[in-house]
Length: 351
Image (cartoon, rainbow, N blue to C red; front, top):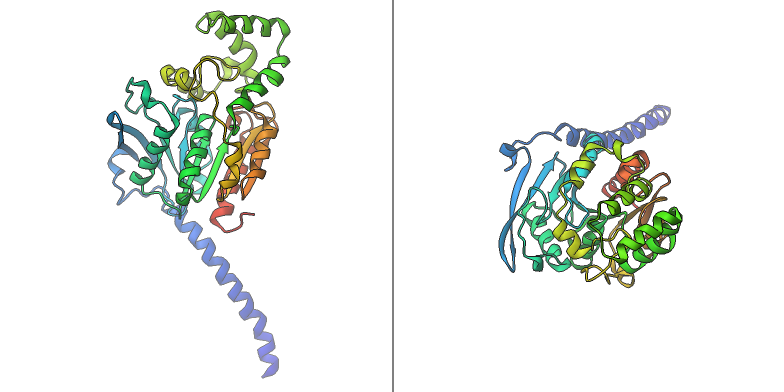
């Protein structure tokens, strides 16, 4: 009898291990099987689109969102850059998130693309945008159990500002291609990136900027030929992906110039973001945080790595071939690292 017990014991242990492993696997399969099941969702008739009414000091407006997929544990809200850009350049996420079972939301901020586009410049400030994101979160029923906030470029500023005020609502924070200081960004652009250009090109660009001749076709030509293909998206302009071109063609310039300014070398004039700096506040962030940078980014990758060390629970993802749009010029590294961060949190493996 004792021999029989010893013979059966490994079988029972193996069976127990298989059962626990199967339970986790079955849960993942269940989520993936239900990923495109929109039954019971109030946005089913509209293919996941929901127009959300937001309140501002200038009245009520509607902003556009679109949900992709179903996952009760992982819901990622995508905050686009600009300011004044739109969700379109995030369409490459369709090639990576669905197969991982990640639910995500496209979102055009007020003034952008499919959302209402009021012309009152008093609406274009950080605090109002943060309040808008909170209203969107509530309307989409996102909470601490599932809410990941992703911000790229200006969206990274917005995500960080939102987290500093509302991190109790967030499961994971992702800041992609954005530094924690506009003055530091301006210094990097002028002291590091600028000198890498041909001296004659840089001198001509600086002269045009000094004359505030930003609308001169020659200024745009110099930027598109010498700066964008090296630091914004490392492809010849003629080969840029259609979603990027479509997105950039619809930027709201009023918002962009009001907050960022017209220069590509930092923030100039009276732009509202000119003195924005949150470096000293990074240690207040106590939720899992991922920062993403690229070797050729317009933002300093060393600064973004440092940001990950300043928050309480940070991780840095470096894209060795990436620029400001590293999701396009270093996509494998970018999305592998981003998805791993999200999955590690969801599975309790984040360190």
